[in-house]
Image 1 (tube, rainbow, N blue to C red):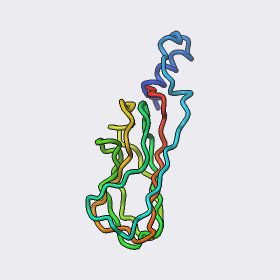
Image 2: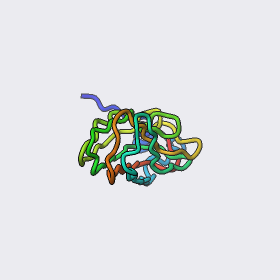
Image 3: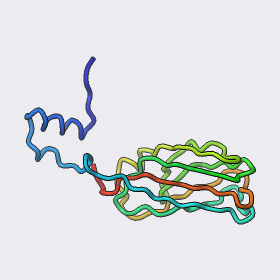
Length: 150
């Protein structure tokens, strides 16, 4: 069985083995903290329709999203979404129907996780069908690394 390394792990392995100097391992990946952007939306009497855009917080320039946690409660009709976006870029797909109370964990797509944001951008969710009942609430938490690493 062979061992395979990612790009940064390859550089680190060479430094650890003594076959490369530390100058070849210029990255912040190993020490960058994970940050969180959290926001919630409470529906005003089911005003949303298909293609409504819900905005959940703003990520700073340099952020690299890792994954999202979507919580919902009091959503009495089956709400579906086309996914999450950061700015105009699709950030995650796979949001299944939200009904009653629950949560979903969604990984960030490579389009937003592999390159640091060049400007601050909003996190948005676009509804595909149904509305949210009165007092229905959706929470979105985005976990991201914030130093423009990589």
